[in-house]
Image (cartoon, rainbow, N blue to C red; front, side, top):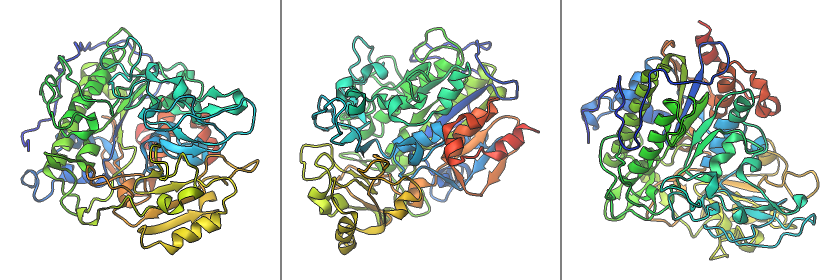
Length: 569
């Protein structure tokens, strides 16, 4: 455990990617108010209580003293929303859609990275994660298909650059998408559906770009390029080294703590960057350096550009610290229901805090800190916090019980397929013609075996989403049934994990939301808040009308009023 962390200030060290910061970086901004830039940071998995503990201190960790000095310092001029809820389901894909667009799956159409669409057909080529190729007849009725928006659409998901032709070692991005692995739309002549057209509504990034702003985003898969919104032109700079690729040495790269990433830090966890507590820090490092380049008025790779109007990245380190049980190394996670972090999780929280310090210092060095709104949140949380509640059962799951009542591409009966949409939630689509009540009765009769907490179908699904089904006018993406298990139950037999997300539980959804600017007076807000309020807030603080967002018009998503009140002082 490192106990001598310090709040970074002044000059950011320029190692690893040849970063050079200039105090007078060129900018391209909107509006005439206080805010010219918005930096959005998603610390995936980080709960509101994680920030509370690291900023206040907790018995048994760091002598009871705070252990996230940079986040704590940021909080001194920030609004801390302690009752913030992420998307439901709390998967990364709808979680990022909520942050980027302001919408729930009802309007975005994004339920999970691996979901189902009754109006689309299978890809022309089997994806890297096992979604089988299938037929598509132009302008004929669709067969329906599982939708793969995970690493499976990469040209080669074992490579850090996703297999993009001629790309450098870390240069993952939209060039690594294999169009033959994308689902196809028979109503459009079986054209492949790219991620940015898979989302149904516009995004804050797209709105800001259309108004003349320069936009950028950094994430973990090329599929997250949907952040730019429909049309594919909402992002000026997108960077996504593949997190599920095989770990390789990163010549010249050091973690933000200064540890070399060449040779590989952890030779036991090389199957993927997110399989190792140490290697994930190297992965997050290359994304932080890309963000620092952007703060300096460059592209992520260091070419001349402008400081983005809205930009940011997601961190994977805390999520790995929460959920991984690494063979030969040990488990991360929490020690108790008070969210006392284990040593491995503590190291990940401290590491991301160091990264935050470098980002803030870079904004100051570039001379734009005072005119930047910094938003720190998370796409999702992680469950369970209480380690005694964790149950991993991949045998008695809703999808297993329903078997051949669900599409073969979703069914556990398909041993070579991509698998059902199940983590600590089960999202279920039924075959055409299967009676929903029949399926529900099967699940209800085995509720104890599947650890069922609640089941949603019919009106209890349609209330918050859309009416789903195969008939004309039905939403082809709305699931027939959603099962949320008892707290801690995960529909997995994996011994490499000690937690998961996707569900509706408090641990899954109560995430950090810190909105900061040097002009702010520290404020704690306990009223119910959602991560989807971030998108209209970003649009409005940059001088645009939040009603330009489809989600504001269709769902009534509200701006974070406390932010606009503080800016009006």
